[in-house]
Structures are given as C-alpha cells and as structure tokens.
Amino acid sequence: EDKVVQSPLSLVVHEGDTVTLNCSYEVTNFRSLLWYKQEKKAPTFLFMLTSSGIEKKSGRLSSILDKKELFSILNITATQTGDSAVYLCAIFLNSNTGKLIFGQGTTLQVKP
Amino acid sequence: NAGVTQTPKFQVLKTGQSMTLQCAQDMNHNSMYWYRQDPGMGLRLIYYSASEGTTDKGEVPNGYNVSRLNKREFSLRLESAAPSQTSVYFCASSGSGFPQHFGDGTRLSIL
Image (tube, rainbow over the protein chains, first blue to last red):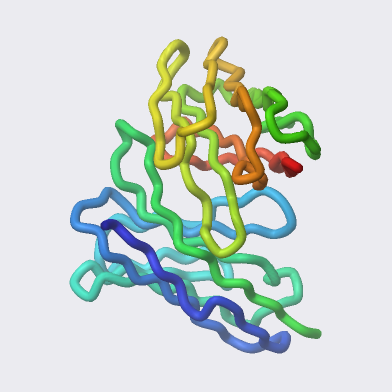
C-alpha cells in the first residue's frame, strides 16, 4: 500500500534555529512530491519536486528529493515565529485522478 | 482576489441529517477537489473533478456525493450524516494537475 511518513511529528525550536523536516515514502510510481504549509486554515503550496537531487529554494526554505533512498527533506533556516505551522508532504500520483497521498504532517512551533 | 471560497465555515448536524457544502473558485481552473482532514491522518481525497461535468471517486467517497455544476462550483453532499463524518473539509482547485489553492475549510461536527 502506498504510504507517506513524516518525521518528526512535532518540533519546538527557537527563533534563529535551522530545522530539517523529513518525508519518506513507499510509493512505486509517482509524478512529484509536494510540500505544503498549513497555518490555521488552508494549506498553502510551497514546493513541487519531480527530479532527484535538484534543490528547490524559496527564501529561507529549501527542499530536495532523493528518489533512490525514497525521501525528501524540507529545510528552514533562521526560523521565525511566522514559520510556526503544520508542514505537509504529499505524493502526487497521477494527474488523471488528481490523487495525492498525504503524510500526517509535522507541527513546527518556533518560540521567540 | 477571493481564490477558493467555501461555505459554511462551521456546521453542527445531528446523525441522519443531510447537508451540502459549497465551494466556488474564481481562477478559471478546470480541476477541483474535496478533501477531509482528520487528526493524525493528513488530508484524504473524497472526490475529484477534472472538468465541468465530470467527477471521480477518491480514497474515501462512501457517504458522499458531489456535483460539478459549472466550472466555478463544486459541491459536496452528505445525504445521511454519521458521526464518522465529523471532520474538517477542504475544497481545492488547480490549473496545473495537483491541488494548489485551498479554501479555508468547513469544520463539520455530527452528533
């Protein structure tokens, strides 16, 4: 069965720290891996990773996919309190079905 | 700049009641989705619509029906609500094949 597992499930850091969130998957064929940030309401799209080894970067956030070892990481440098959120990883299987398989999410709390 | 709008934001139902959750997007997207989010389980796809007039079942379609009335609107109906359907429901839309824009969610409690 296709599965996505995120770790840790929760994390508390202080402002300025660097964090690494992990996403491992057991999926045989997929199009892309996606990262979302969910604050109090709607998830917002962060990154789409399709190729192994190519880093995507947006400000203090970056992400990379390793298709050989079946995982992705999301790095956040110089964390701020506004980074506090649930970070969701999802595998995008097939554009014909629109199906994503989501992990459970990692809850990040950044303390001042 | 509304994006994806869901109504209502909150609802409490009794077991056996029916209701329709509404979703509308103003980005001219072809694809629309309904997800439910339960604690510790991420988001699970209920139904998907690739275009006006087409709908497909997702992972957890039982107990739900959908209507893609036009390109803008995609509604989710619970015909006979059950406590197991207590959840937060998200509608999403996409012009790129995967859910990219989400609504703020509907928090539904069934007693």
